[in-house]
Length: 627
Image (cartoon, rainbow, N blue to C red; front, side, top):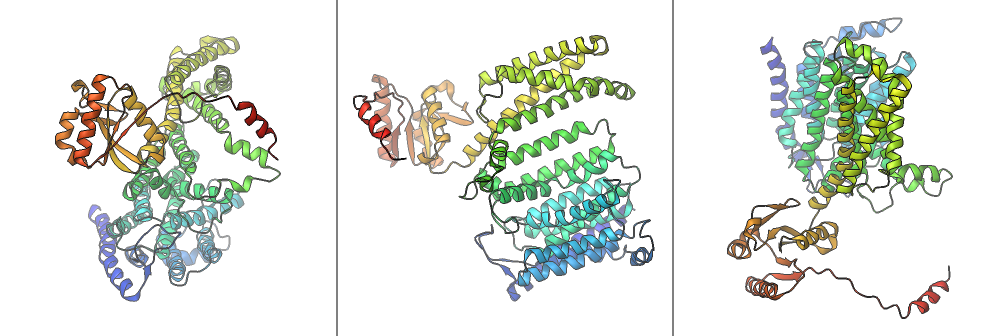
């Protein structure tokens, strides 16, 4: 059995590995080359049509498993319902059709709506043959949802084919997770997932940064269609629970879903066409934050792996335990979407379509008053913390018994804590600027909120039914999640500042309070155009320590001996008080920079008096300026 499985994977991998360089050579001879354009990411002409190798590596292993007779039988059925036909046969038929559509688009660049019609036709074939999501009891709703799922994900993989190795990488991770998911529950989907993983894994060898070949639409459409249809098979497993049936496919494909949703919403609300390409995808925004292309792709593949194995966990556990994994993953991916949506990609104002409309006031409130979003998040975090407290405190049948008590008391807990949070002013802060005082405030609010909720439950229900350990665990979870969400915004802003620093390399002389203030100013003021590599300080006890992640390299005398290895262009003096010793230090720094050809600048903080003698004249002029 194992040798048979390895043969399937090895055949797909080998075919893809052999055919990809062959197709690359043909593409160069035939001038099938993707030239750089303004709305595309790559900078050099790159051979395309790698999708030919991908579909060949998929179809040839699957054709030995496909039962096309079952497809004919399904078509001939009068009622159209019953067992689904061979999944391999359906995948081969749909993939060949979409491959032809993508190939024609790669060669002749067809319009987006024409491509969409082709995708709908392929999805309709799958639904007609009996494959569905099984999310709704209504056949009509479930059919429409399945069509939307297949078309949406086919497009999603087409959209994430915007950076070297991203589409194939995300698809490879999804296929690996599907392999784990289906073993040993469904043999045919398991084998198909193995074949997809092999085909995409080998293609990644040539497609990862720097890419030697692109897959083109003839590849991305096939991958998106195959993964989306394969994910439907999970719903066909009889033992699948309702919650898992809905959440597992979403978790498996969370990265393409996030990217498509983020790009579509921001483009529409910014007055841009969602169907036109651009550099505003999730991967592009990560690069804008300061990640390299490789790291951006690896990060998204890593997120896909975490979400995929969360899906596997949900599929293996009961409905009572699944929320402990589902909710944190969805919260994390939502926060990521919020972070990335704040990055300015295009010069026009974000959400410009919301302006000057009759519904503008409401939508602008929802869009720009971020505290409202924080309130919603907190209510979810409070509910999740209370749930986790019960889940850890009680196990097995005891949890099922106490779950009714959890549901009955949850509204009171949420109401009490939200009132305390509001009353203590934790929503008056600014996102991304959490300080020690804010941490203290949140700790106090969480403690008081827990005590008030305990008091309220005692008054309403009597405290005898509740375990004291519940409220201790609830306080720990609530406090950790509250501070974690706030801290994540600060971390995002700080990470973006550090990774996007550009300019000449400098060293900061003086690792005291003034040095820290100078570092903060550099991080917050990009107009300074300097990138600090660290500090030097004459206090030998500070050597080897860090200030906000920047190392204290050593003393000035030590630095003079090996400064060349740091490739700096200048030095920044941070100390302000130029007493006798400081003057000597400044003179030494001047001499060193003069001999070494470095520039020298001094950081200075001072309060200057403003001449108010002409304030009345200026006030009069201001009042007479025409409106």
